[in-house]
Length: 313
Image (tube, rainbow, N blue to C red; front, side):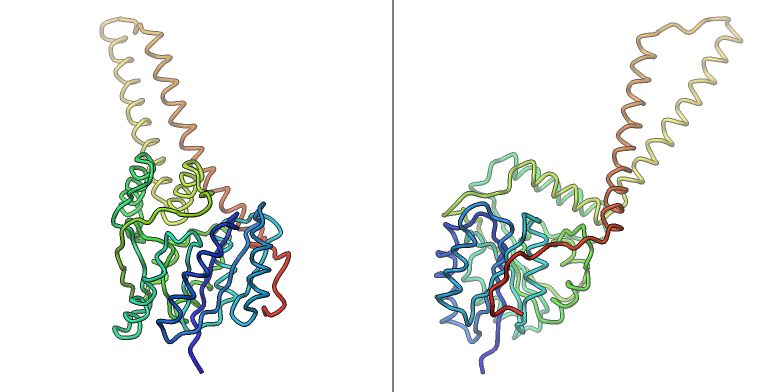
């Protein structure tokens, strides 16, 4: 009996890309000793993604499985749901747009079997085809994240990786509501090796990731894996408290010794506005953390399944 490799594929409005992805993966399967177990997760798509998945399941019910959420819960929920359904000895997470090269799986399997790695990840060494502003902010994010967090994240790392059953189970133990998988994969530890590849542009369909959604996602990553923003707010508060106290002493000293009133209403107003802005920024940072705590304490499910193929457990 051949070994099973679970392929977790989150999908959001990917009706055009799914057939091409499936065809490419079937070609890869002929070159390895594993049988693919496809787990497509329809993340509340508004196009015909679900219909395409139903059709694909009808053609190959033995290896294709799908889940369909009641609404869009986000890619993180899709990844977690797929991992929960995976039963293979090895598990991989892939984007359906073929920006994660399927041919890398062959080398991933070889490395994970011969060199006793727990995980083979992938990272892009170039961002050709991406808007320059997005590439710039991505580099800034990784540089900042690695400076303020104990969890090191590899620049250019993708969710695309091959994991052993043991590591997959470890990731599943992290059932938190606010998820940032790139950080979770690093936090659980295990021996990981990264394969490098040139950026591959999407060939079919349109990406659902806007600059703003990626920016919010990066903020989630920082907040989920570092308390440094809270410490920065504390440092700013301490510095301005000391400076204001020194300023008060200086003004009182001048008034007592020289009898000079301190002019400058405009500068005073600017200082007050500046410090007020710092205070609001600090409150905003604190509010982000409190908001995360609020969502965690609700203990809501990460996702709700509306439809599941009959063969799924």
